[in-house]
Image (tube, rainbow, N blue to C red; front, side, top):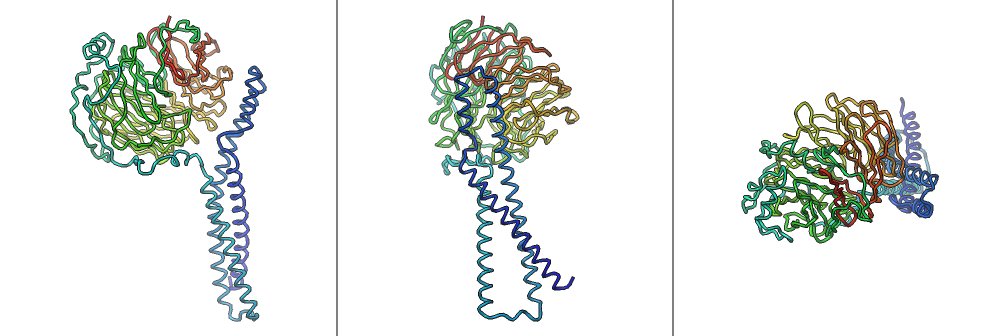
Amino acid sequence: MNNQDKLKLSQNIAVIAGIFCAAVALLLLLNFWQITKTDPIESKALEALVERLKDDANNEELKEEIRNFDLLARKAYFNSQWQVETGAYMLLFGAIVLAFALRVYYSAKSKIEEPEKVLENEVASRIIAQKGIIIVGAAVMVLALLASFLSVNQLKSYDASALVAENETSAEDPVEVINVAPAQTTTNQVPEEVADQETADSENVVEETETEAQPEETVAEAPTEAPKSAAASSGVTLDQIQKNHNALRGPLSQGVIMHKNIPTEWDGAAGTNVLWKVEVPKHGFNSPIIWGDKLFVAGADNTTREVYCYNRNDGKLLWTGVADNISGSPATPPRVTDDTGLAAPTLTTDGKAVFAIFATGDVIAFDMNGKRVWARNLGVPDNHYGHSSSLVTWNGKLIVQYDTNRGGKVMALDNKSGETVWETQRSAKISWASPVLAEVDGKYQVVLIADPTIAGYDVETGEELWSVECMMGEVGASVGYADGIVVGANEYARMVAIDIRTHEVLWEDDFYLPEAASLLAHDGLLFAATSYGVFVCYDLKEGELLWEDDFGSPVYSSPVYADGKVFLMDNDGVMRIYEFSRELKKVGENPLGEMSGPTPAFADGRIYIRGEKDLYCIGK
């Protein structure tokens, strides 16, 4: 190729690249202008439709219109985000091609022996024009790239804008573990003798003397690069855990309850079959947990984070533990949405201590009598809704899923000291789901779900055992596990069933997908609840849709199996009860009398439900 051919080719490529860059830049600027004029989360049109539905609650066509509109709006939003991100890369690629073509063009032009003879003023005019074009083009591309940067995933800035810079603690920074003596102030503290007697009378409650003997000193956390030896066994067996309700969705966080004689009829407003009802001092979306005769919940506001212990038989508040004076805790809590709050994660207990985590990144442990054992801050989670991953404990270790906008990781903390036993970095984006424990061939693993993977980790070492890339978007529902099959799902994405031993994808579906309600898998069946009020049952192994119930109320609470039935609470506070069956057989619908979002807890002959303000004990 001679010099003249190079000149023409580079000129043509430069023209095409310039037009391409200009078009992409213009589209990005228009996209940015459009996004700044609309709220990506709320829709006035959708609000209007919902207001119409309040006046015509039985209009099924209007309900379907709202669902379709919401689905299209959300899909359009995420599609717009993808287009902007892709456009930014395309613009960058076009700019590189344009710069290379111009370089080749001017290099080839300089080698021409006899340049055109032009007047001096004409040369000056061309130079000025060329500089003007370059400056304008560069400005447009810079503005377009800036617009793409500002418009991609706007939700990430939701939390960061409200944080005080000096109070932010990076999740990777060293943290201090604090063992605290009885200096912690509690209210309604139960006398030592009474508490000890209650403990002795409670079934399956392990002795607490070991926890109470914690030294009054500060212990520095050891480096986390190399895993420590596994924590000593807590002495708590699976049988003891199954006789209690020690985590979100019960034993191992799987949603399968072993208790019997569960009530199926009540009315919270009328007081029918309500054994007791108490108001919880501070708000929280966490679910109740139970060990023996004690029930625990947490609450928080912008000033205080608290843990409450109740006598589950009569509703008496036994003690209040305050999460304060924790090294690294932010003076100003992070900004969170109203439907998440600062106390969304559910607590867990091993019968010796109760553990809580808040949206500030504070983790705290109290013994069963309310004495503070240890506390630490994991770094303020960068989360635009608020941290909501719940805790679970096994074999002396507290499992924490900490997937945030800054990166993902899963940790195991020693139940007695709060020190890190192991910590594993994850190739995962932010997640609001919670860890689930799964027993595979006699060994336990932690199963986590986030964008883009479902993965299993050795509960003793933190080693990643397997990972399947199959998720996308904002993941909120925890996995279901039964019969060697893990099922994960995310709204506007897909539902995927995985053989936990071979890591093979058994089946997929993309029709009925949960937003916040976790999946329930048990004895060959799989249950899922959508955010728009459709409850469905699948064959666990084949993925065949067996039945569906469209009741139209939003659902955040997770379905739970107990006593041969499946219990599902909607956000309006109505508990729907179904027979555990391959056919749709509804047992009943029971109103609480107030809004509710947390998943209920169960004991023999009892259901414990947390409403928007009150805590209820339901029994015959």
